[in-house]
Amino acid sequence: MESRGRTPQEETENNDGDFRLRRRHPLTFSMPPLFLLLLLLLSSIHASTADDICIVGSGISGSSTAFFLTNYTAPIPAQLRVFERRDRVGGRLATVSVAGDNFEAGGSVIHPRNLHVRRFADLLGLAARDDGEGDDDWLGIWDGARFVFSTLPPPPPGSSWLRRRLHALLNSLLLLRRYGLSLFRMDSFAQEMLKKFLLYYNGFESRPVFDNVEDMLKWSGLYGLTQRTLEEELIDAGLNSQTISELVTVITRINYGQSVSISGLAGAVSLAGSESGLWAIKGGNWQLAAGLLKTANATLHLQEGIDSVSDAGDYYVLKSNKGREYNCTVTVIATPLDEVNITFTPPVSIPPRKMQHTHATFVRGLLNPKFLGLSSVSDIPELIGTMELPDIPFSSISVLKKRNQHDMTYKVFSRAKLDDSLLAQMFSTREETIQIDWPAYPHYHAPEDFAPIILDGKHLYYVNSFESAASAMETGAVAAENVARLIISRLPLGLRASPLLSSEKGADGPPEPHIESFAGEVDSRQVDL
Image (tube, rainbow, N blue to C red):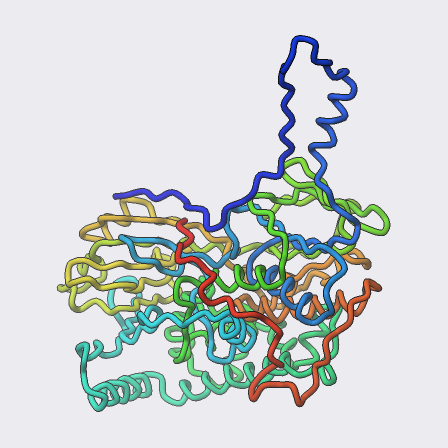
């Protein structure tokens, strides 16, 4: 089994002062100790003006905030700084390399109606991946001992259009026979949520700026879904218990690592994430964040985390883990505060929230059919979902690449790390194993409480407060767009909002942002975790 280290996606510049005293001549004057001390002290202070706008976090929320701030305004009369404690941009967007192939390790799929992310990709010149990852057609639902339901194995590669259509029809009939009208009710529930979510793409003239998440959700009609569980909502929608305990549970365990006791809005987003037409960025979704930051002309501080944020009156003083200080008129926290140690002076108050950890295990090898109660590898579905039962050690297993019948790459999601003894039972062979522990999304419960968007009543903003409603690339972009508009509306920095008239809107979304093509400028290197 091969162990992999990390390869930085971005290179950083060393801005540390480099002061060396060299003896060039026997009579060279030596610096007084006090002057030398002052010189060393000055070298540890990074040049920063109080006009800086500082963003903590380079994931989709932070990069989208930077992009919208620059896209919706005239040139910003301030430096835009983005701090990232890791050696790569993207936050929870990253890829992993297994046997020379790259696969999504974090946020994996984009919905066709994720309009911000779709437009980011178009305008950055990023192509959709065409290898079929995430398009798992052969589903099996496992109860810990046997498969209680399975769709048909896919037709052979190169099959005719008619055969593929017939295969899809037969699978639909199998689902309908087992789950009945609940299938249509489940789809209707998800579509009603999407219809309301699309309101967040309305033009400025019909969409307010929100300074708290509750008002933002109430305006779109989605707040009620955060106050009840998904199970309660689906029972009221007329779904039967078998559909909820099997099909819906499989979807929520795959997408959020949680059961149907999650809050209704997160559950509806999860159901929407199981629809057809899902896609991803060729080369990795992290390129969205990299491209947005480049377009925003942001100064990126990789491997520089922020340890403290202090209110200094008209600005904030940010101290980094490199011993530097930055003075920022605006500070935007674009990373979950639940598992980072940032000291705020004065303290800020946010409701307690736990992050749900998802352990992603990538294995090149071969599943053991006997572990799953099967007799042959050829009988194993390409996507294995599981029911909410205490003895099942994983949430899902998916085939990422099939080289041949004896050599495949799998992705396993679980709530806890899978130890070697369990992996030895699950797999008959393992050539390579990579394990990643993601603090992937909040642990959802109903009713949800929301942290403030404005943490101190001044200019300290928290994008990830919206994540208590639902967590996805698009929800991060929607929350970031609102925070950018909120900053513009509250700061006398000479920023002016760009006109957002209905005549400028696209056929199905917001106006085209002014952004140069990013195609060809993103290198082909993956983020190797």
